[in-house]
Image (tube, rainbow, N blue to C red; front, side):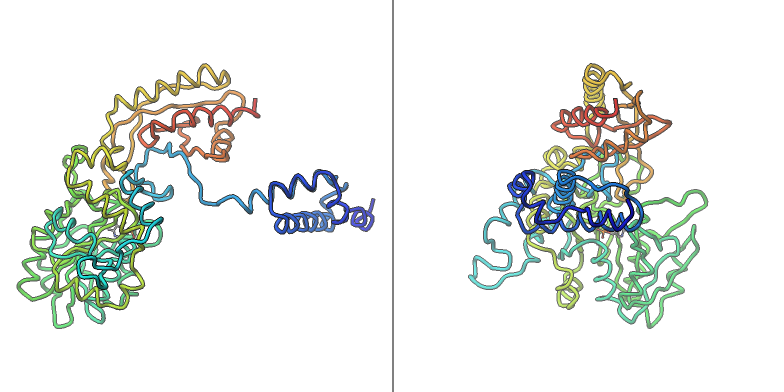
Length: 466
Ligand SMILES: *Cc1c(COP(=O)(O)O)cnc(C)c1O
């Protein structure tokens, strides 16, 4: 058959609409989109014929089936739940921090009801959305004032623009960091209208380097936490205390972009230099900022703390309106912060903290349970309990590995790459990593109530392959 004949043989829309398969489809999906899908499928067939890719015409049933698949793709949400078996707790690609039940409850409450978001219930007058978290942040960190924006990138931008637009910002060359996802301190600084004045060298910067750079044009002394890397060996950096003393001497404000919001020290971080927000503020910094969804374990947010006069200037900056957090962020953040008032409770209730602190023996038992299930249910899979190291992630604690347990899986009937692809293609995708031809799932980032689903997923990923 030549192309012309093939094109003529494509079933007509009217004919398909009368075929017994069609009513079934329009029970599942609304008619308008269903017809659009049908037309799109037929257009694809026509295109494939013209390109010489087909030699026979699909049946009406096949066409309707293709339309059903297309409708599935159109109507199912693209953003989906996944099971995180990577062991990276604050996994930026997988959505960073999970929220405490209390925070989820607060978000649902704010979504379902009117709230006093910008209404002062005592005065019966307009209030500010920025006031809700101020008191609890002050209690937790000692900060005089606070401002919450969309994320920490926005916070850095707002601080620089408010305090140093058209002025010089002195920062160590060793701290001109790039955080994943195209956030680079020099680029943000440029966009903010501040002028970068880098001092020192990559590995060593001294107080004199800052001091020598201070002049009439200086607007801000800045430090940035080198979140995702460490410079080791022959190094020196300027302590916050030194920066604060210079700032006081020359009348220039000091700002620290701390990256992650650590509110109390964790056991696992012994010997690590992750900055503690309250301790940094106590050194006399004027402003500090950090993310809500990294170590803090709250929704995405940028939290700015510091001197009231400076925070008030930021509040008046028209940029703040463009960076303002929505009511869900404020609801989730406030209730997470309230949990921090009791540290032991915070460690249990906030998933990021809970995962960091989870007892390794609990994880071993979970891995053992999975292995036992898989061995009985999936004869074509070899499964073993494996010692692993989890990471905190999110640019926090790059040096810290948290001892963990997981399972190592190796299918016999297919390649481990194929197995990994199938796990990613499940209705609830399972994300892990391949190492030395074994598929690894770290138990630290898998919740207890996900274990059944995990075993089912492993079983069905093997299913059609056997
Ligand atoms: C993560 C990070 C940022 C960006 O914070 P987001 O909340 O992701 O916008 C900025 N600075 C430092 C030092 C960071 O670690």
